Structure formats: C-alpha cells, structure tokens
Image 1 (cartoon, rainbow, N blue to C red):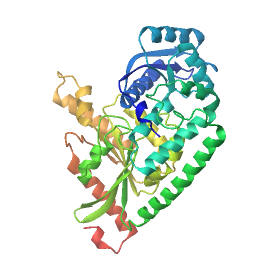
Image 2: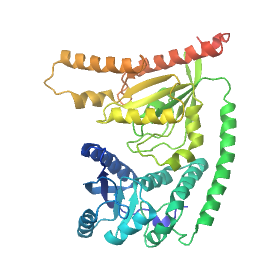
Image 3: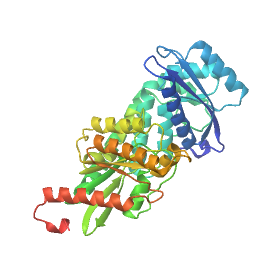
Image 4: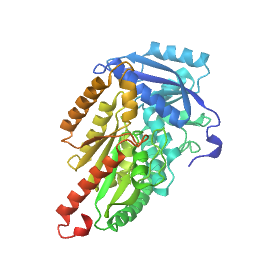
Length: 396
C-alpha cells in the first residue's frame, strides 16, 4: 500500500495540539503531549512546539477555538511547519476545516499511531491487520478527507489506503474491509491451529505499556534476538519461544504494547495477536518504573486486560528499569540507609498491591534476572502440578 515516492526523505517539523477538558488537569494533558511527541519521533518527525487550550468541550468545527487556531496558523506559517498533530481523534470535517485555515497537513493521534503501525508491520498478518484498521478509520471520514488527501505530498499520516485512490467511495472501502476481514479470518484459523499444536505446555505472555522493555526481557529470558529499541511499538507481531528452565519447559510470548487512547480499530484488527494474551496461562506485566507516569501506564494496561477479560489470570508484575528509577529518584547526598528504607517502603507497597507477585529488575543492567527466572519457574511448576498432577517430568 505504501507508495515509494511518498516515503519520508526528510524529518518533518511538527506542531502538537491538545485540549484541556473540564475534568482534566493541564499537567495531565502536557504528559499526553510528551507521549505524542515520542510517537511523532517514532514516526520520523521532530516536535517544534506544543499548543494547549482550555475548553469545556472541543469545538465541533475546528476542535480548538477560532482564536487559538489563528494563533497556530500564524506560528505554522512563520516557522516552516510540515505537520499539525492533534492529541485526540478528529472527524473528517474537522480535519478539512483546520487545513483550510492553517494550510498545513493535519492528522490526529489515531492517524499517527496507524502510520507507525503501517511502517512497522512486517508479516502478512500484521500488514493486513493495519490495513483493515486504516480503512475502518477512513470510512466515517471520507467526505472530509478526500480533498485533504488529494493535495498531500506524502509523509506521516499518508501511508496506506487513500494516498493514490482519492476517488474511492464508501462502497469500495466497505468491500476492501470485507475482503481484509475474510483474509484475517483465514490467518486467525492458521494461528489458532499453530497455538493448538503447541500441546500441553504452560504458556506465558509478556504484556505492558509500549516501550517498557518487554522485548529486552524476552531476549534475556529466551536468549533470542527479538527487536528491542527505544521507540514505541518496536514489536507488532507476537514472537513465541520454547524455554526450558531446570528441565521444566514452557512457552514465552512477546506481544504488542498498549498505549493510552489506542484506536479501537487497532484493538479489533489485532484480535489474533491479543489472543496470545487471552490464551496465556501466566501474564508477565512489565512496568517501566523509571517513567514519571508509570502508575498511570500500569493502570492503562490493567484496564485493557480487564476489558479483555483476563485480569484474573496469574500475573507477575515486573518493575523494570530500576537502575534509572534509582538514578532519577535519589540525590547524591542522600545516605545509603535512607535510600534503602525508601526503596523497601516502595517495594512493600507494590508487593501488597500485587498480592506478593512483584519483582524489581533492570533488564539492561541484568539486575535480579536470576531471581526473575526463579519466580517464573516456580509459577510455571505450580500450574503444571495443578494441571498435570501425574506428569512429574514437568516439575523437576
């Protein structure tokens, strides 16, 4: 779907826009925009400026107010900006109205995430899943988007359907959605058969917010070479490895990361990927404890797991990046005894909240990795004893 001539040849200069609703704090929206800037960087753009406006509710025509939009337009025209990114979903009409006023390419958070997924998709399954999500995103925006897409010269937000098919109408888009769903149904059947063929092994799945270190932990635990980099959504396709600890075998899967405001079309499209989570026996919930909003990220993942109906599965919460947490939390002058007390209090709090199923590691520094292996092994053996009480080869 990606036209080669539309690939980014230079870093796009982006302006981010957020709205503080009546039930939000400005600090919270700034945090969302910081994450949006990271998403933009992952897609190949550099954030030049962020605009925020306090409104009881978004403007139905242009999302932000008329005065704020004029302020943004003036800045964009004077600073050679290529891209305007809104932190919330826009309608096709809103995109058209904003572009008419600002005269620069405009996308929203969902469009940006879809763009990243389009770039990262490698397998036929991932490509079909992203394509389906893109068409589902475009369908309700057709009337407002075609003029918007017709004059774009490529770059972020233009990968996938629409860039060369401006005349596409709703019927054609619906036909493509139907075909993609059928294709994914066949892929899902094949994936289900593959999962079924894995036999009686206990299955463990890594879950967590995007960019918390799941793939790095996967590599450490399985000695594999899963892509791990400091970008959002480095992993789209589920990777599964057979692991044997002290003669006890189990399957470990790395899954796509969650994020705030993840487009629901993506959640629907990536159903087969998320099935790895639904069908797992044990979840390893990885948390980047060094992130300023790690508790919010943990909450986002827990809410998503609850929506998937898997919150009752045995879960080990892995607080990763403890080295960075210690570096960011403590001043040099603080004595070791006080540091130790603060750390112990923090760990005790999370042990209580997770029912004693928390462990604190640094995957990068290999801190407490042997302890993590032992915790996983104990949990896996416990499940084997319950499921196969007479098969002692699993236990020792």
